[in-house]
Image (cartoon, rainbow, N blue to C red; front, side):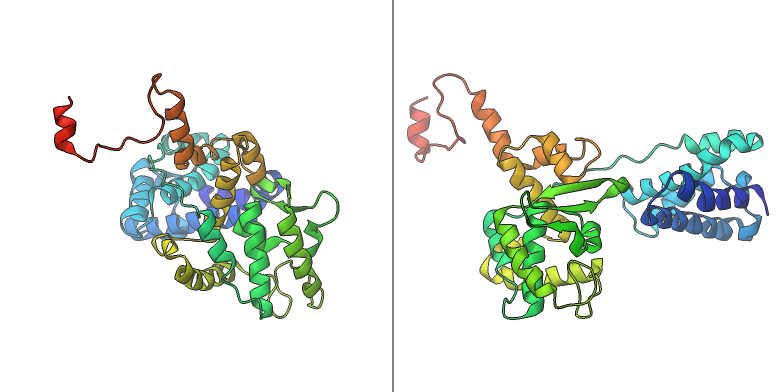
Length: 329
């Protein structure tokens, strides 16, 4: 076993779990990155995987792998940077133990991430939310479950992974009603529930009590719904909602869109960005700042505050009679 193989085993069996306590999703992502990297080097260098050591991890080879991800596999810049982070994580741990490869490792660690363009946040308007919440069929058990799920997600802004992991023990509908979840970085947080959400969840939990298992939103046999199942149910209800609200047809709506919608509703209500960051489980406000850029109402209010005296607030509208306007100049 060469030095690289030893470092990989040390990282994934000891460091990632016992010392860093990384989540299973993060470990799986890092593992897949190294599997793809070793396969790529095996194909390009014509060397078996067991024969690849630190000397094969040159800047040219690692950059070639990242370019392969982007141009051949069709990954975007964000995914490319995530793969680079996984490579850096293992090499950073290995560097002190292998000074003989310090030059090669240091050069790879210095590879900069690729600049990315942050997409415009997409969210639903109140009318679109109403149409979506009205879409599930209340005459069926799954329809009532889906309605309760959508009401809670739109109000709380939970991530899809957090929704999948919820149990009936996580929701508290008494005084100070709230729901607790474990988000990114193992951060535990509690999110308050509105009266509407509490009423909806009370009705749902009464019916949920007749089902086995502990998952809050469960399938017919009590099992927790998967990410794919949640997206599938959302897509089904969007098809119905688009009939009542045509503006939904122009939007690509996922479960994460509902999270953005919850954040934008808080922002429109005047909630401070720092509080919204805590609400959503962000480590800092940098991620939350994106919602400020998406809210045109805030920008319009800023323009209105800086208008010269005597100027009527609002957007500019040209005079209907262009000839009269030119004459008056």
